[in-house]
Amino acid sequence: MAVGLAFPDHAAGPAPRRLSPARLAIYVFLAFSAAFFLVPIYIMIATALKTMPEIRGGSALHWPVAPDLVAWFKAWSSACVGLDCTGIHVGFWNSVRIVVPSVFLAVLVGAINGYCLSFWRFRGANLMFAIMLFAIFIPYQVFVFPMISISAFFGQYGKLPGIILVHVIFGMPIMTLMFRNYFAGLPIDVFKAARVDGAGFWRIFWQIMLPMSKPIIVVAVIWQATASWNDYLLGLVFAGRDNLPMTAQLNLLVTAEMGAHEYNVDMAATLQTALIPLIIYFVSGKWFARGIAAGAVKG
Amino acid sequence: MKRPHRWAPKIAMLPTILTVVVIYVGCLSWTVFVSFTDSQSIPDLTPSGLEQWIRLFLDYRWRAAMSHMFVFGAFYVIGCLVLGYVLAIFIDQRVRGEDFFRTVILCPHALSFIVTGELWKWYLDPEFGLQKFVRDLGWSRFTFDWIADRHLAIYTLVIAGIWQSVGVVMVLMLAGLRSVDEDIWKVTRVDGIPALRVYLSVVPPMMLPSLLTSVALLGTGAVKNYDLVVAMTGGGPGIATDVPSKFVMEYLFERSNIGLAAAGATTMLLTTIVVAAPLLLWQAWQRRRRLARNA
Image 1 (cartoon, rainbow over the protein chains, first blue to last red):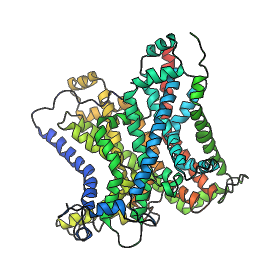
Image 2: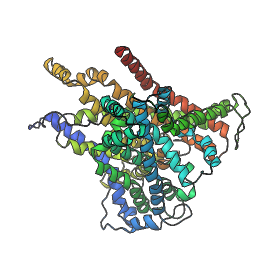
Image 3: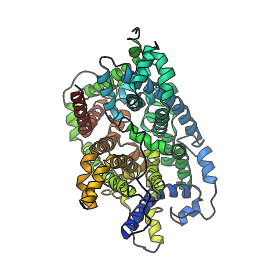
């Protein structure tokens, strides 16, 4: 199977009517698992809606008696992030400015690479692809220092275009992998027919291949958007103080040692940082899981 | 058919080729090379032999960080594999609400490790979190303060890590289970082989691709693990949860010893190679076999 786009389908046949003890055990296990996965998300929401006296009085797992949005607004617009007490909304917009262009560019580059590697193989293409596949696994610590020198050389260290480009560089291998596997699954005759008709490199790409790749484009956009929104290390190193992404600002906000800890504000800021990926996850539904199957490194 | 386009793919892929050569090969080689120099706050390219490597492995904190990485990695990988496989098996039993369970299990994976760390730090806070909740229920002596315990804090990272990542394994394993030939299931039913044996010894070899992929993803994830530690424990209490990724970042940016940091980063790279090798070798072998069959 070239791409996991067919997956996930459902179990064959309907669920049995009778509830035997064994099946009851399965449901009990799954219910406990569901609780394990949901409780941390639940306490984030519950805490964000509480007042500090209520937090001190009870435990994180109680639902607030009188939910209010004071902490929510404070986290967004007036909590202290480092020295600036302007809330985490600054980080939110920084992340938007970083993520949107980097998704567009990484997906485009990945599509072009996948197209070349599937239909226009040239000498050395295999080696290049192998290096890219391996690069997916390598820790960023191996690259960051010389990359700072390079981006400083071009005057982009700590600037918005610099961090966008860094995201494109590290997103590209997995984007390439997704598109290459997808194109490899298309019938080669489509390509051959276009060639016979005299269509050139770019025309085949823009007018035939790209319109045929809508499913993988959706998967790639979801993947890259989630990955670059959730990034911390690259943003911390390359974005610079003025473009610090939301994850980095969240960490500054929570670890700020000044004054008493406002756990409700911390959790509201955490929820706000988690919001975009959560929305992507719930809106995209099965496409998110398809991305995992497609992005799981297969040769 | 005219062939004026031989250069087109190379030009189209020029940015990629440059990236591969300059970043993936160039920067990586630079870091490996610098680990054999005496670079302090600025890179100095005169070789100094194994000096940094000896310093690194004599460093108490580095050795602690490495052992934390291995402990975290072992429990995280095995925990994710076992729980992910069990979840996939249970979900594959034609249960009602399959979509619900799948959505819930995979949900944490949408969150960043920073968010995951903040959540679990709060959840496991002895004063306000789970421990307080259970005590309020009446078990007044219930204790779960691992996150503040020097010896046990690393396992709270394992729990949070599994929480975030096990959904991926579940998805991959479920795909693996459903790619097993329908006839195999029929044969095992007809022969009356117990379900436990089917899942323990009959099916796993057929799911080798899913298994190898999971191991490589999780294992290299454990080497990369940085955000979760920063957000959840900050490496503490003391250096109880310090990890190589954090050590390297500190020596790069705060303690200005680039040579030592480069030796640390190279060690991370070597660990990554060892962890990802089974998958990459298996893939190369598969490709060779495919080619041989086509020839």
